[in-house]
Length: 142
Length: 445
Image (cartoon, rainbow over all chains, first blue to last red; front, side, top):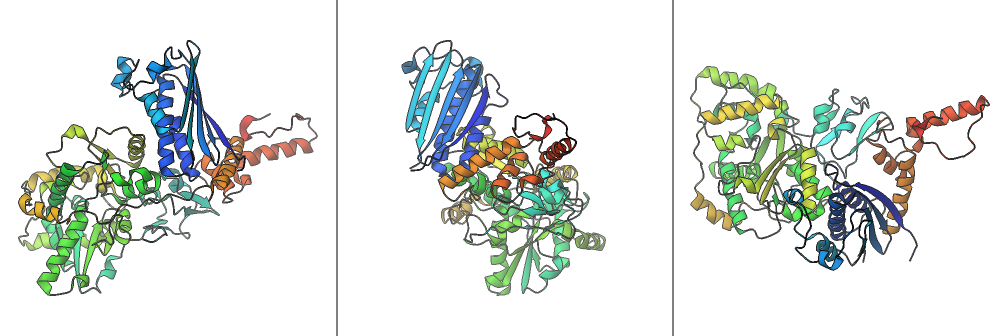
């Protein structure tokens, strides 16, 4: 196994709905360009998009860092925001703290974090109230 | 199916001045300027024809057939795109145009309206049985199909597997001609009168089919000067011509006539490639699943604004609306008869839509990782102003081209200017910062 690793960071601005989705689209295009299998890319893209939208909707700002190695694709998401007081509750399907405006835009079904879990091989989430939330999402290449 | 990519467009080096107009407008970043001429990246081009529309030098040549070359077939039948009917004054009816086609060398000219009606019904029948992932994406614009095949491989199974009206019309016209003349089917030559070069792609290499029913295409812009005087002859002769087109058929000039059973709020119509790209991006993200059907057109005004039309597309569209009022409203299709044919699969594509992913950055993952790292290193040095002077449409594409060995970093005029200033400063003996970091072109001193 080689230690080849590609790393690229994407900045995500909170409440910037005009550009929301750009980071995950960039990640998807990059992986396509690297010739990764399309089924893998789709899983990564869905997880990345959910994580990006969570940052846009709830946090002040965040960074998504893409890591690609021959073995896996990892996306590390760190945001500065309100944090999640009860992670177990947030992981439940259908649980959401989305505002009516967010629901208006088609979000807030309470499927974001469950969707990330479903589309990743490993998913770690840590959060500190009033500081921010960190996600590490891993999809294995083979 | 062939590994290579057939394209309906060619750049003429003797006419191309390398002005970059086509490179800037290309929606898939498939054009580069190399040694003063435009060149195509064949794995990225979707044949949309935007380069033809923007080229002031006529250096982008559509590979449609010449009208003069159609004489040597046993029997030729013309199948005009409804867009053809919108290219003449309002007193020229579709019936007159079909007659003029017959008078100008075609053995027959077939109206598209029956096929349009049949396809609308076929869409209805297909959707009523479809249980796969949504939304379905229309497959009648060859550029949209190629875009999906190249950029959205996960969505190929959502392309509507129903034949286009032009394919159905060509098949029916060929059968009719063969039955009427006793000729073998393969001696009947079906010629599509096309508003865009992209239709050539679906003739040469039809996605979803073993072979197209259409044999060749002539551009409306090539046929127009030949047809105009014949149309005047038909008009002055006073001969009564039958009107076989219908209002619904003409509507296909800019939009798909969707089944009335399909609630409007479950569908979306998207015109223009930048918009189509945004919608396909959203579908690819798993959004828009509540929609049943999304109609996509590469051109902003639908087929009336194809690269091989001659009339202003807004005038053409207004004419289409006006012509619709004077044409029969009735649907020429018997739905009962159609259901049996639908069940026999007569309106279905026959093979799955293939994917056509472009060349990746590296053949294997380790190479791709190394090259992507290098790409980012190169991109970080570039000014990010997307001036295009290097011959690549953006700094990002230039960085890739450098990594792939298709371009040299010294082609960046901004970087070169900075290097030159550095050298001049050194020659003049001026003191400069000793940091030794590479300066990105525009940050001065």
